[in-house]
Length: 327
Image (tube, rainbow, N blue to C red):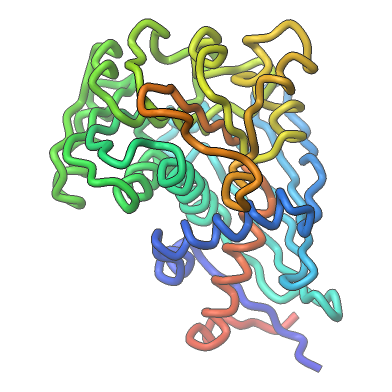
């Protein structure tokens, strides 16, 4: 009996998980979630009142793919330490024996699968001719938001918004140099009036732009906030938009962007048009018209981690034998 386990780094994950494949995997993952084939309890969390660091624990199961558990910590103040805000690991188990098969670094995996979810949402909900992208945030996950959206729409111009002018400028330069797409660092959030697609991936606890600056026909991906008391999107915008979520139960428990605009959870639940998986399955409609504002809210779901981790592990088993260690 094999008593070894794969240990896969962020570099391994990046090498084995191209964004195009990650978007396809998200399509399967969200379809499985909305169809009830995947088992995904609402994640549990603990926090340190002194440091503000939060730890999240996210299990998932699928009859075909087996089991996974992701444990991550989130520390927004790490930006001041020149460290990633998210650290973590994903553990993958065999579906038959339950034996542990692999441990993956969660930082690249989380960034890629989060970007891929936004890419999938943009593909299903944004206008076909969307060419201008606005991104709030300058961290690793902002990069994958851009990579994913550019996979599904002919983006010609990108606007980046960040708290630190130098970091924002450096980020815009990275986009131009690495992706050969026109990108500028914007200081005035009113510039999003030009955007066809907006992605927010920040640690802000309050809206990062004004509702009056959202143009008709805009699609918004909100992926930064993941607590009931924080929200990146103006409540007025949420109330006026057609609202899509990654998972109803999770968003109604965790997403301030979904909860803040309404007096009760029942009102918030009634405002949700569909899960993105229901759109994929053909059980719900997508964009209702060219001028509609659509909003996809994702708090992140463990089914995403399971699908991409299993894919990476299967690829690694054939060409990353040197990453296997005895246990």
